[in-house]
Image 1 (cartoon, one colour):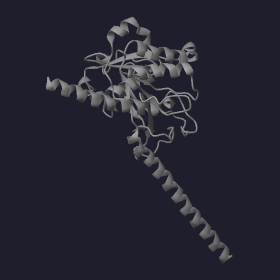
Image 2 (spheres, one colour; image 1 turned 90 degrees about the vertical axis):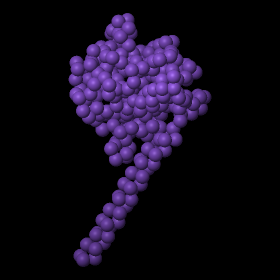
Image 3 (cartoon, one colour; image 1 turned 60 degrees about the vertical axis):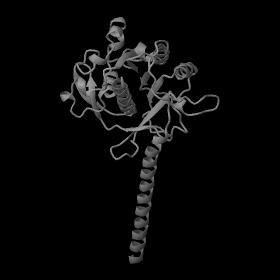
Image 4 (cartoon, helix red, strand yellow; image 1 turned 180 degrees about the vertical axis):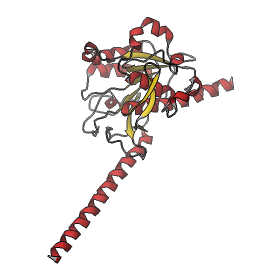
Length: 289
């Protein structure tokens, strides 16, 4: 009996050591992926019209009346396309706030001066809503928005959705953006899959596959936890930017605020970083003049 107890004890100790080693290896891999993200390269943000950084947010709509957003929203576009600014799913409004301000731990104390530079201008282009027809037509709506971004010379497109299928028309629309030097910042996806084995799109256009070119205008963004370990929901496996997303507070419709998390939020936060750098560049140009 004593020998049996000792044997079982040794087995449990061995299993415990194995589990600790496996967890350490997983953490090391996740953190290594985050470090490798710094190797991701993309084209620089290019301004297609002097004096303005034009951002198209392809999402569920953006509440143009929110006090932290309205100064940054293209009010002429609101007049022409007011239906594009009705956000009955608050996702788009939340994303717009993160693009302009980053995470907002003290949201109600913020004002317009806390956002990015005044040259930034947001335009909403809806691809879906609670309306069933919009959900059914979401892919067609997305492609129409991408083509509009090309036709109207936007500088950056932020698109927070994804799917497992390579769509030729979507690929062609993204390639047009690429050819004009328009950035596409997009979420890597929340299905916790290895993107090398299970590619998602449009983030997948950033990585070479047979018969396609590398779209270095596409910036897929994954999510990590506060410890910089890979977020439990985030897709992974490719070198790409990673941002912390554990429930960031941002703007919501009807002058409100609230938390959401996901690679959509990570993508918006990453775009905020890019805008901060671009705004510094514009400020330096002003000083030289």
